[in-house]
Image (cartoon, rainbow, N blue to C red; front, side, top):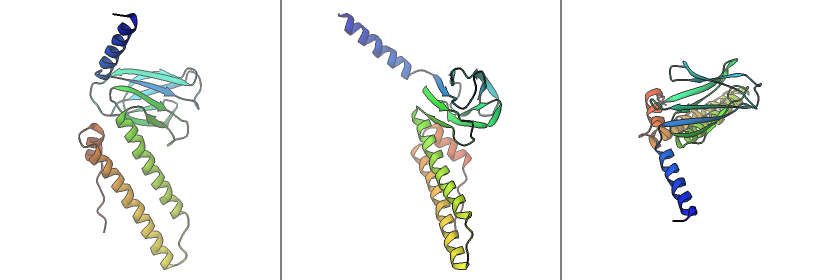
Length: 186
């Protein structure tokens, strides 16, 4: 057996073990925070379970998954600056920003889908807010505006329900099904 094949087998074994791991790692980026700022890892009950500090605009967490669920990371000095993510095996990338609503998560299947859903809902919410900033001049315009906002609301609901359906057998789908009540449209 050559040294090359030994390294190949070792690398393959490492990858197989890593894929079956019951741990997650958070590689965090905190570019808008200062050196030494405190970052908290919060469980589903929003209780801190681990603390890290910003070093060279980065932070790091490594934890065993006790139960897959929706956790969050937040800046202690700015609690509105937080991002939610699903604990699942693998490396989760978190970009924590000081402007609320701009933080991001990626790196694992569930978290990529969670961020995609979050981005879609935020975009449609922005479109609703933008439309409502321009009051209708007459009843015809009022009806058109109401129809447009209703259409966006329906699209949001469909987006959430489609994500739940695609993920019905994993924590993301279960989370949506347990926490989202679809509106009854007329």
